[in-house]
Image (tube, rainbow over the protein chains, first blue to last red):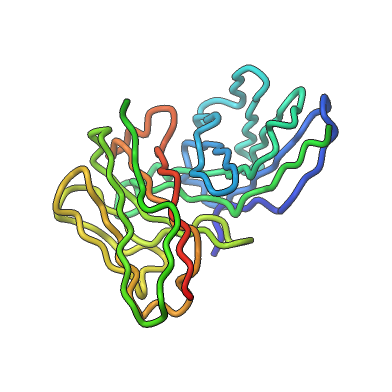
Length: 116
Length: 116
């Protein structure tokens, strides 16, 4: 059962335009969400995060929006640059304590291609 | 500089042979993780360890084994029992407990294992 879903395997955007990557989750106990960026043959690197007590977090060109009622978050990249071309993973942490409390649950990723 | 190091970057194995992937971190992180990435599958958790001398199975632990004798090291052995071992393997670490700070996990650069 996939608790974090990234329904778009790929996305193509023109350079300078906005990229919007979406992520849906099913577990209402998730309280912290992160986005990671991954280039081929490299490990993912942290991009931006948001706590469930907020609905928006901004860092330069990157903004994450959280809609708790819809269990949906999105990553906006404005303006998109060719160097943004990578796979983006959405991840979530559960608030409950227990065997899984130390883990992040990842989506399957969305491959973003920014076309010059 | 602190970080997490995986070696080797590329590894070839003959069918029926065991192989061990190295993961070392000098971040003083308590928790360490092993993930496997396959095309279209995202990141799947193999094993994780929250503290020295303790580790837990993840979602796809069959055919793999780990040890955590030192805080800094979390080697993964891919055994001959793993039916489809060719994949990209990622090691990660985190401070552990409930505090993921802003970035959650720190990932290594990965090991590409190919069975020949």
